[in-house]
Image (tube, rainbow, N blue to C red; front, side, top):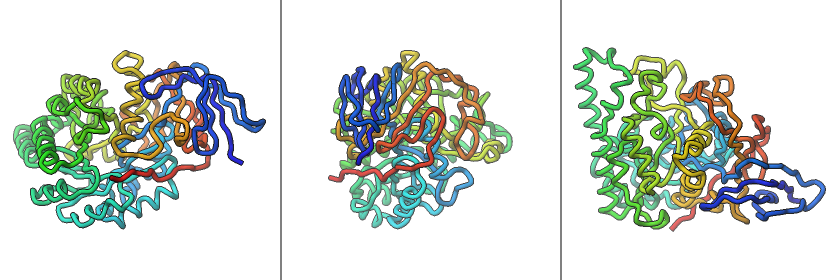
Length: 450
């Protein structure tokens, strides 16, 4: 007999509307949404959601969970558990692991790990290289979410910098092409310039990061990717837009499902600016770099104008010891999945974005973009991937509250107003008021193909 969970008196946020309703979960699906639902039997678990928002589970389209090969930084187990506590019920993980997921075999090996250890639903991108076009051509029949192209180097040394290889990828990829856009030649030239000005690489500081990984580097690379997509009519998604100039290049004249070229903004580029390097240092060192307050505001403008379609994290943990090295030796990236939803709820409270638009960018749109079956919405018949959020339960982020393997957060010391109280994955209550239940119910995401 299928188990029932009845959520009563919730404020459901879905498809541009907020309304009070009950919701019945039967097995792994949403069975019914109605103003008043009677428990179907005496064994029905009832959760009173009075005063809370019921949202679709967040779908984070860009995370680095570090497994295999970099597990001292994090694992699929540890980071997906943190995601669960933050209201993220599905993720798409990146290929720059060791070994990198640049073959179908390596990609499916990561799926095998996730099937054993992930707390939330999972998908993986296949990585592009200068010479793996034959693997990319086969990806249509694989389980890949998309094809990740590092057009600027990052953790894992997967830089694709041969023009012939990029042409082949954009021309022949049967799946969505996803890019990290930074021009490597510009970055190297800037690095040499600032090393000379500082009197040695040991004198560089985090304030140099947005100067080295500059607006010019991002803009050149994004323009190149867009030109290739237009030339070959490729479906292109540009990850982590960090400059205002890039943000305004994207079109908002079509609904997302009809767009061929799309873009993503990340939490850290919406929250921080280059003024924060003075206090946060390497702990907000990401690639692409966090840039000016004006860039941040223009990214927000593009997001609200639907030029930017998705909000994600680029969750990329490193150890405290690694991040505490001198700037030039410290890796880029940081952990965010445990606090992405409540960080965005801060902007909701401040009137920067409505809760309906937040849900669109974090839940609906990733499902549309990656063509994920039966997830991303609160609809009868869809998987019951859900999160309850109390909008007024203030708490301060402390190190001992973190579930990340790396044990730190750029949000330490921040007092958030909202709190995730419950997370459901495929109909199972997996997280409740700080408790992670010792049962995993995650599944591989299903992607519709052309």
